[in-house]
Image (cartoon, rainbow, N blue to C red; front, side, top):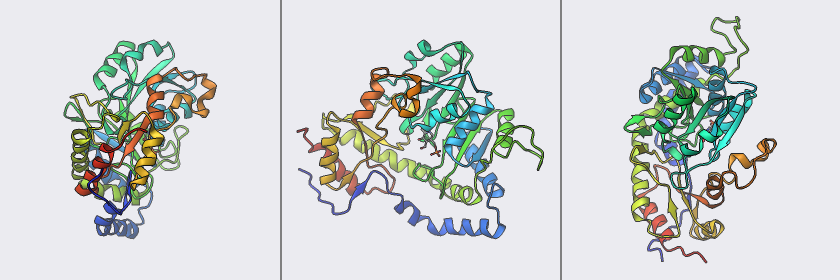
Length: 374
Ligand SMILES: Cc1ncc(COP(=O)(O)O)c(C=O)c1O
């Protein structure tokens, strides 16, 4: 049985510790935004964009109001619309597919591999048609997808590669930060992300100036000169308070990610219970462990057991995209993406955030190792 008995509840994610540590710095940054009344776009957003592009080693970053908008605008910047198809992994957060659907195009879902839980590159070509315009690879849970395999397919069929890096700020593929492998990469800075704003925010990185300029216009009512509108655009600017909070937090991102890696390493090395399966990590992938997901035969049983031990895991995600009601008109059936379906009904997200103490990590490991499927 577990050697430690903790009184405190251990959730899947707790944002309070992080925000207490940096409260003063954040409030100072907010005061500057307030004094400048720079609430929408403006210098604090521009400063963050510059810093974030440097962090991703890309030429440009464009701040927007959330990660879903980032995906939507990236699709529009690629000229994707009605009649087009875009390949999307079946196991991802639904917003990966929303960006496609908002343009009138159709997401085409592809299963994941049974071990990395990333899009299965060997199942993509059978889904490519004359309408296919792009593939969205998702660096799911913070672990880079097989970039090279997708780049090869994109080159062969003349498709765009787009990265959904919403969960992967600071993750690296072969030592290179994600964000510059596709024509564009979309990030979420939702508060719960490894780099999360004090509010809703998102961003797009790119190395190509024409996408950068187009995105600046699209997020700002299709305008580059005030009150002159060159195309139908959107109000999807990032707020000044969000930009300022992100600049403060960006400085801490490497240390927060390193702490998550330390915790993940302990989970990987010390969870020895064979009733739990961990995500396979190829050599080229350096995850930032936005989530630490395991699978187990009896998920309900494990949840109940963990809750009894004051551990409250998460669920990412219980329904794969192709079986969501919103996409029932596309006609997918159970069995179409068996690995994504298995993952959806067996996944459990363990506690993962930088402020977990060593004692809490040891406790979670002990409790998991003592678990026996009834
Ligand atoms: C993989 C993925 N894509 C897109 C998004 C959308 O980001 P946002 O919530 O900022 O709109 C998220 C965020 O939850 C995500 O996890």
